Figure 1 (cartoon, rainbow, N blue to C red):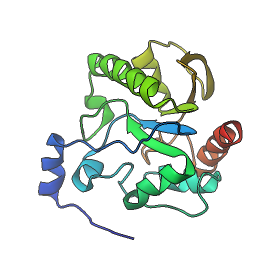
Figure 2 (cartoon, one colour):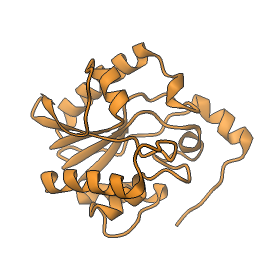
Figure 3 (cartoon, rainbow, N blue to C red):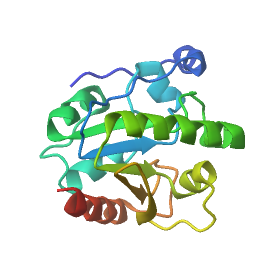
Length: 182
């Protein structure tokens, strides 16, 4: 497993970077983060900051047979899973994003979903989904709308800063999606 802990200078320089999508046509699930954090931007991989619970939740819920690291993110593709972001801009916190960025991100995400046609789009962040898609009350799980034929599923943000959901809660909610997506 590759590892690299970015320096403070690398973290600050990451504000100018993006993290490439991990996506191919016809995935079972396309996971969609809010936007890359500075740590992810610095090393160039999704959900990279230590303490982010995305990778443990994927494993605990049965999406992967081992706990992957951010450096192994492309190992998701043969399993039928991918990763993108609602907003490409790297920030220290999603709170730095503007409502216009969420709205524009939703438009770009919808175009990407129409192009790649995953079975499910799993948006990781209830508030982010609501802001981007103009939904007032958002709950986890399957949403009423679709993008083309793609069903939309909302999961909590797996950031270690999201104290509303513990690791076991995340695993259970991810497992619900796993059951639905096959």
